[in-house]
Length: 354
Image (cartoon, rainbow, N blue to C red):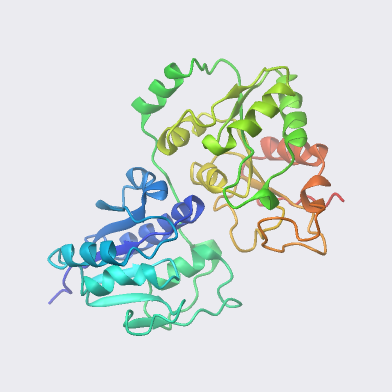
């Protein structure tokens, strides 16, 4: 007798980049269990990507206030899910509050890392060995496997593959008066995490001017929070770029990025989106570590100095100099970009410029 079909509820992450990487888990589960159903519970700011992940059947929007326990709302939602037939839940966040809904929903198998001492809420508890499983995507994949299974080598992890909506893509081009007559450089100067991930505006502007002089067009993507930075970059190019920050939804940003000839981005959600679209990508790292959250594609290069003080994983530079980004020269990123464009399928290239 064949095993019964599983129905998963995945508790999704709160960061856009992590949600992109979570698609690797969805793909991995579907490859092993093609008849299973995967639903995802996620906050609104990451849930927008679910429509671009064909492995997911249903999105359950988490309407809790960010950073709040919202105990009553979580209990109410959990009770409403009791008759949905879920057999398994996998918790990607390590927080205590993320474990409340599956526990109240009485889902038979509840898998996650112990995190914030979630004894009693989980019944398939995993202990995270950060040395053995250094990458976020490997940790996600591990939670979908049986306890004790061999850690999946990064080379065998399925890469995220976001789907582009062709009609939406054409419409967002029209709405923003964009053309595809020349090559497109997409720049993503923002990072929700904080300033320690943000390459200087003047550096982005120098990069933009380099490609504008080559008769490329430059699109500046980001959220509404990134609009001021993008306007400053635009001003340093004599207003020759297209400032799109704050003008598009996250799915529309996916569609626009699909037209890119090259993307340069900080370590951010948009960087992971570019990788999931398999766009030639230069990813700029400062306070964070590409060994932990790398772009999951082959046609990328890493721009990073690797100073003694980095990675510090702080939102702001604790030494107040931000040398890991300020001293990463535009010429270095341009050099990586040119090498990448000449050999778009090359493995990761690293910048060693001081």
